[in-house]
Structure formats: C-alpha cells, structure tokens
Length: 390
Image (cartoon, rainbow, N blue to C red; front, side, top):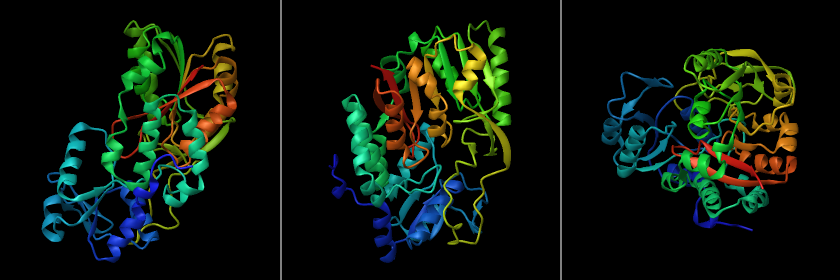
C-alpha cells in the first residue's frame, strides 16, 4: 500500500547511527529547545554528537550544555568538511534560509523532524505502523499538488532532507484566492490568534470581512491582540474584533499553559516533546519550557453562541493552537456540521496530526473537500490542511 518509495529513503536516525558508529563527527547547527530535542533522540539511539556551532557572525560567547558554541569556520577547522550537520532551529526568513543553504553546500546537512508536541517520533517504525492511515488521508486529497505535498512531507520526515522539504513549498496567496475563496468571507474565527497576525493576513484576501472571534490564551499575546482590535475602528476598518482570552478546547475549564509570550506558547496538558530524560551528551541539564500558568479553555461552539446568539453564519475557522487542534475541532463540531465553514487546520504540531486531524474532520462533516499546502521554511512547520464545502 506504499504510495512513495520509502525503501529508497533511508530512515535518518538509522543512517545517523551507522555514521556515528563509524566515527564520523556529527554536529548540531543551532542551539536551544530544538537542539535539546534532537540531542535527546540521538542519545536514545546511541548517536554521538560531537559539538554545536552557529553561523559565522552569530557567535558572541554563547554556550550550550556547558560547551562553548563554535562558529561555522571553527567547526570546519576542527572537524573538516566531512562532518555531518544536523540543523537544530526553525526559520522561514529568506536570509536565514540562505545561510542554511551555504552550510549545506559545504557539508552533508539534515534537518531532523522532531515533534513540537507529544512524545511520538516520526521514524520508519511510526510510518509503517500507520501506513494505512496515511493512505486513507492521501485518498481524501483533492488535487495532485496536495498529494505531492503530502508525499514530500512524509519523505522529508523520514529522511531529514531539506531539498525534499523545500520542494513542498507553496504560497499563501494561492490558498486564500483559489482554495478558500476568501473574498466570500464575512465572518471568521481565529483559534490561536497570537497578536492578530493571521487575521491581518486574511483581511488582505477577505475585503468584506466584518466580524471575527479571536481566541488567544497567552496574557501578553492577548494584550497585543486587543490593542490591535481597538486600533481597527480608529483606522476606519469595517471589521469588528471579538477577542476572547481563552484557549480553544472541547470543554470549558482551566488548563496549565507554558506562557512563553510567543506564537509557540502551548497548553501543558498537550505537552511539548519531552523525551524520557534530558540529554546528557554535553552536560546534565533539564529541558526548559518556560513559566507555567493557568488559563481558561472554552469550546468555540459555546463562544460563538454567546457572541452571536447562533444567528450569524460562520464562514471560516483557523486552527493553530500548538497541539490542541484535535480538542479545538471537537469543540467546534456543531458549527462544522451546521455551517460547513471553510477550515484552515495546522497539521505539524504532532507526528500523528497528518492523519488523525483529516480523518477527524471527515468524520465530523463528510461534505468537505481536502487540500494540503505547506508554507516556506525549515523544518516542516506551517503545514496547512484546507477544507472547503463540496
């Protein structure tokens, strides 16, 4: 039932183990939480990581796990161009992507896929265990581009190859104009609204948008969101923003929350990737996920009913809730069944999102057509599932 030749795409972790056992120097490119995750997986598989470096000009006395972070030039002098490099940070900035490509032009470079949330690693064993699920989702996809993106993402997740990943990139404009037909939207719900950035993007393609509900649990992000909402009327915008300080979930209550103050702030009850133990390859250290606070969570069905009295049709919902997408979808199932709003659902936070979320949506409303696109950047973040009424 294979739909792309996985036998020709070696599992990255297996390959790294072979290279490590042969004594080849393996280095991390980048530091921080992403590097912590990769180190932990390497330790699990017995893969030795020698050192950590950053791009030339970006090293200013930084240390990582008690070791001084090298510059790229220093790393080349110490280990030579035969070193194997593991990219350990994320970016969509063109200037940073250019720096990554420069390193890849000199050394063998991979970008290992480690999940943002949950403890399930996307390796060959995971793929084989869920091959039928992946096939089921692939048959739902509406066009060749969606299927090509899907195949490329799976191949990248197994191989870590950035050339495969970069070939899956799309442009947001195409999705808004030709899949979602955003120019027909009058109402929208933004779940995981951050500071209003995705609503601002939507407004470019949805000129007739007049009302939006924006749910954001993080205190600092919410303050920025409400400030933007207040500025709309002063600017003469026709959009009325209803900001709600709560996380989108399938029931009302209180959950713990990692209040990082950035777009990746996440509910602790939908955990970030936490290996069995912190990596000890360089020095014993605990993984750090930021300050924990309690936040309200609510279903969109309830929030929408309170704001509109269920008298207003919902045209569009965006789900980017850092690992809580499944609960957020169940919390809006009444609107999904009654209104068939267009959906944008993030599929990159958990390894299982690629099949669990599309199959859940199909169960909630079998009248959707499914499209898959991925925005530019490394690693495989910003994977968007677009669902539109048949």
